[in-house]
Length: 132
Image 1 (cartoon, rainbow, N blue to C red):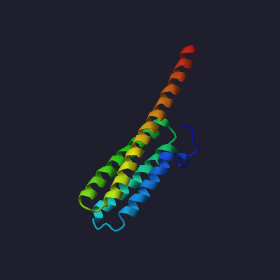
Image 2: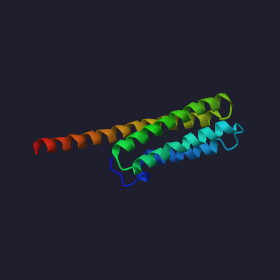
Image 3: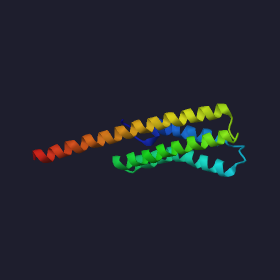
Image 4: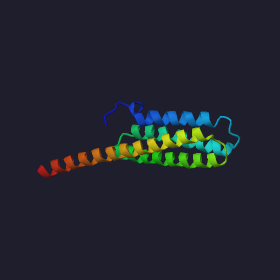
């Protein structure tokens, strides 16, 4: 899990694409509160990845990845509601839900990797202190 910047992370890139796809899919939507809410939730996915990555600590990064994962769930919920209200066609709905699910799984994997790396680092530090 080596990267120079959050822009290098595939999950951030896909989160950005998801956000853009949501904006495009809801351009003509007259249900303004739903449109606004789903656009904000979609925008929150890559934004929280970026913010967490820039915080500087693995613990903070993992915490913000959790926020991003929650935003993915929020997006999916709103997509289901939009579909039931006929504010979104079936093909767009299926594509967006599938992508949100994949991003959510990627976020879970990245969070696990970040926390595992942190735990391994903590164990090494503890061993050094014990051996000193």
